[in-house]
Length: 241
Image (cartoon, rainbow, N blue to C red; front, side, top):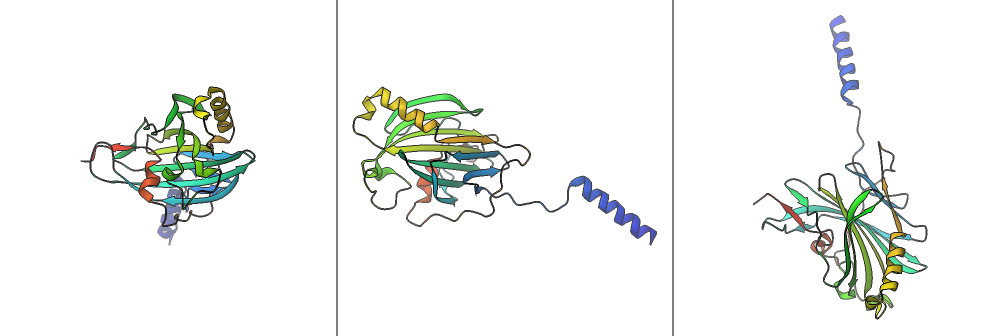
């Protein structure tokens, strides 16, 4: 009997030392109106008060890496928001990829790029900012014809950076309906980029300080092509041949 109690005591002490109590599963998604990764890494994208959540999805798109012909499976989480003053859309996206793949540190520029700045620091995160024109028919998130004024296309400001040894990427897009001739108006572009930067905040958590999503996000409608959604996160590369 003494041996039984001694073994039980040793097991209890060992449990306490190694933290064998039940751990909560890592769920990334929406919590308190933010897109949240509560761990590995602890990051959240918080929209400005004028934005309301429209929908949020997760997906597992396969992407062709830059340096091999073996498909890499990635994980994507996206929350989409909308504002009416001014009329704008906000996209917050997370992407994850496992070994041997990583997200490329330098994202490709969109076809209709207007401005690009590397080494842009926001809330301590070092990333790339791009302003570009996105035709409505080339929007990977579009389902069916866009209503006016979005049918003319979007003016987009995008900020992207990698984290967790380049296995995790964060992408935020701010969009407004495209106005004719704005690409030739530096002052208007500067005002647009200022509105984009004020449309959200990046939060860095510490020791479980960020809220935890209660459940996994649903998968997107079939009309949305997973591979095209994955490409928005940027190129993948790795050593697998």
